[in-house]
Length: 499
Ligand code: UN1
Image (cartoon, rainbow, N blue to C red; front, side, top):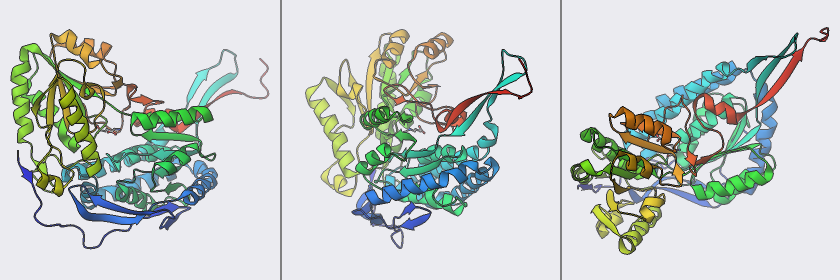
């Protein structure tokens, strides 16, 4: 396996300043200082600034509430034009901002650029969705009356987003929120603040009125305060199941609508008749792209006995051939994880499991040499095989770690897919129609891929998970309307009508 060590610290000529958007004005923030570093070489500073404080939060919520009446009354084509312009700006800046994303978060340059383009696509989708998302008209049981169901924005929405898709996930929450007429206060992960500033810049440049969007780069405390703030009408969150559970409890107590996309322990099942070359490529991509830091990453692999040895040999060879290193280099497939502390936590889980549990390491697992550790937050692509219970089978690791189990036959493979508290995504590799139809019926997941990797989400179709992978309405596409609007049922009758 080749580990690319960058020769010299490269980077931008001047270090960008982080800033917050409150009441339509950019501000420096009243909290502690923040240094945004490159996980591939942690001594390299990507951006600097200050965190937001509690007074910034109050001002942001107040300005979002003040902006709501005018924004929700703005005709949808005018709101849509702003989203479309923001999409154009994101497209135009995708090479530059994609490179910043790769430096800040650690995914490869191609994935960084792809992610900015995905954010653009989401903005373009929601630019026109506002005009398609009308209500419904029903017949009334009484003559002379009709029943309309209309959709109104919910108000001021708190948006709390994770580090792993610093611009795509915020876009797929903020674009529908704005498109349907809500105002937004957004707290991104403080590990990826620069791309948050870029998305807010695109929306401001596109003409978003004052107060409609506020951006607060802050720590989790401010996130909790935002979620519980009396001025917030609804909360949308993507992140870990443990944080999500706390937010759901808070929102439950406050009777506040909440939408959450949480952890995953997504399985790929390779059945006896699978196209093994295809399955190897897709499983490698699902497990190791973005260093496994996707809630949709493939973190479990189930392979039927009949093809297990052949498949695992090819998979391990593939994992060992992956280039790990500086994500800005064109031939690198896997960059670092997001921070050196994330690296150490992931390594600790792997170490504890390989020491105490019955786990067979197929490749990886051991930490890189000291020299490589000094270089950045790198971990080797890791594949382990277990025969029964293991932390690595049960818990989301959020790193480049794939846990394998063998299944007796296709039916047992499907049962093992369901052997998880999570239920976001699954992949099935087979051409056997009977297995496919059983999987469609039986698998307890929100997203199912037949012959493709577990990750990936198109902007126009629903996205979300079953079991502990999510709580609340689905995201994306037209499904987003359910969360970002509230319906009103109108029994409509002319006053001259006597029934
Ligand atoms: C994808 O698979 O491309 O946090 C999207 C996550 C998910 C999004 C995955 N909410 O990884």
